[in-house]
View 1 (cartoon, rainbow, N blue to C red):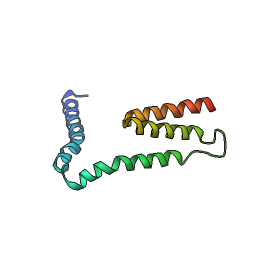
View 2: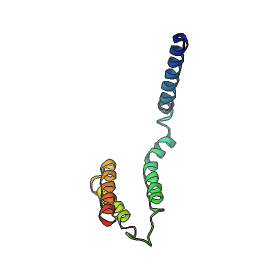
View 3: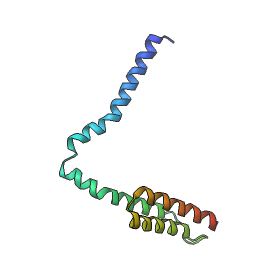
Length: 107
């Protein structure tokens, strides 16, 4: 294969990838102070978390052992940690570890 073809193709792909990854950040700078965007920034994280919790719990089987107990422990640990520390990352890690630990102990 000819290097005069490959090198420009790689450069074009790299530039396109970079621009596509930078485009959302460049576009967001122009609308970041809009009232709608600020409102969505306030309410969306909680809304997304509620959707994720309901989606995660929708597949829990309550009629067979361990009867959803690991899921309840995981959600409870996440809620407790978030109410105590208000740190989303810590809440997710503690909730996940609690769920996995309970799942391994009960199955």
